[in-house]
Length: 457
Ligand code: NAP
Image 1 (tube, rainbow, N blue to C red):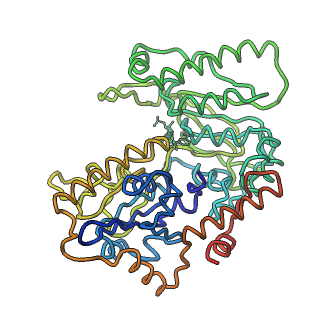
Image 2: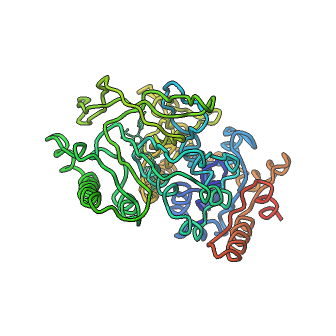
């Protein structure tokens, strides 16, 4: 659903909903309008996301940045319950030499670029000076990126990819993409449906080193415990066998996807010809060792190899960013919580929960899971809210809160341009209208000016 559009779902922008109790209405504010936020509202209100936003007891406040338009403490003054569901707006670093060279992008930037997020529309990845891109990490985001880089441009043209990205990809000279994992094929983080999609792409040569597919008894155990791991491993084995047959009868199409395992990036190397630009990645071969908790981790062997490339995307996971006044566990990159109740301190066992403050989604459990995972996550958080209301731990009795009306007044006094849900619908309609002129599902508005011009009139 288009409500996942990045500028709502990936920013700390809020909508709020007020639900009535017998005497005094309980005012609930949910910050974030991605799946976690909407599933949280759904448990409180109704089924469909857009119907939630249109519900008479729900007010949608788009384009409101928590932390700059208003503070968390101000929000908590206005509402009995605040649920933070604003996801993960930053990314993990590798912390290896050369990470700042030009031509190295984070997956967040790259995905935001091709999805038309205004903050990354000027990323301009250079796709013309190299035939090789390296994607580090083997999760679903890495697969998405490889697919965008390798998909025939005629197919991309009929999707809702941002126009600037389509133009750049049409001129791209990238023909080879390396997807590199520090662990083995059994441990790769992608899921079967997404892996099958890329392995099934037409005219794409899949390259997998057969030796990487050998499994140990520990791998076998892992596969017994996880159907996903087993399924993805089988898909890779099948693809490797098919590729081995194909190499003796090479088909048409010059594009290649290399799935490389047991390699961890060690350093990025600078080009001699293009100062400040990446020319390759040094990889260290790895083996797997148990970390004592049943998980196998990658350990370097001291053997290195060099992979030449002109572009790198680091797809090693996202990271949440705290706002002022929000307890945060920097090591885990999440808000400390028990079943969605925010804890005052990250590490203290006797830690108290913050009254009326809850989390949901990636901010609560870290950047994992598919969209549906947020449904269970929201159910748990809403369960905690309900229990706390019943136990009288939410201060409804101490008086009414200003809720959405108070929020509106505060934002208007600060000249914040609020995008109501009707404005969101206008943006949606305008993008679809522009798309229909070009046989696309939509043509995205990719600047804040254009979005606000349509969404606030
Ligand atoms: P992810 O699934 O956590 O994958 C991250 C990858 O990066 C893993 O292969 C991980 O390897 C690797 N990695 C992490 N730190 C590393 C390091 N320091 N050096 C080398 N490799 C490192 O993250 P994601 O791909 O960003 O996806 C985030 C979530 O969104 C996932 O739950 C994903 O399923 C979901 N998603 C779903 C869809 C979909 O349903 N279509 C699409 C996109 C994303 P290790 O395993 O060794 O740590």
